[in-house]
Length: 350
Image (cartoon, rainbow, N blue to C red; front, side, top):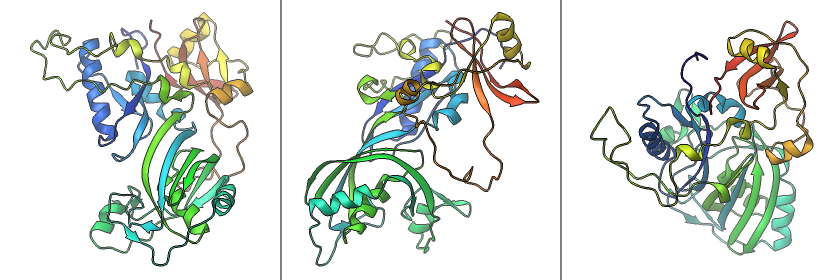
């Protein structure tokens, strides 16, 4: 990024994805709308974690330079309301594939369900369904499964912050779960049922929070699918109004709102200039408070786990974010040679 170029607003846009829409479709709609509102034909927009079409709830859309902060957004815990039906199963673990009743299925007691849930906190190992999007030898597992292959699914270690029973009226079970990235909620329900001698499918899933962002404060109106603008020099022409929303651009959250869980290095004007021009700076970062960690949905103490999920043996880099005198994000910094070297650089705006 060239810090001297005209900066445009960037950050995060919490959105509610409806059932039946893919996360990609939602992002595409938001991208087309923002490109026209900002008159930026090449504006980049991404997301910080997908939701299946059968699920609804919070998708945090990363706008412009905010897309370069996705790795740090993926560190946040996510919260879900997951609904399951016990006594039936499917190869996909949900209602995407036909269900099969379990022969001689018994009705677990509320105490048995609670015991199963109590044993599923902290690090747990999951084996996702073969009908999932995990890559297996260069191909999606669900593609191999639908071609008739017997897919050996890899075990994944995932973190469960909290799991609470919201309602249980056999065969229906509803749980509130806060977990780390990569958790398969379908598998979680299947494992709860298995511990009770039964089977289950997920019948509904709503993501209610991603770190500090909550569904109650997210935008619930999908942008209109407007036709191409009549005037390519003025992309704003012909935009359909959105009820109660002056513009999506005005709803973009400052990127700092999603980075409360990281140490902050406060930079003076000279240091900010250095960092934004790719030069190292000195200083002692301020560690996030317990309140900041809690508001970000980030656990204060991470249990021991080998670093990386793809064979890395080195530890995670020591890093912080550089904050300018106006409280704006200047850079993501990494420790190098006893100094803080810019790893991602961001121009000031607004």
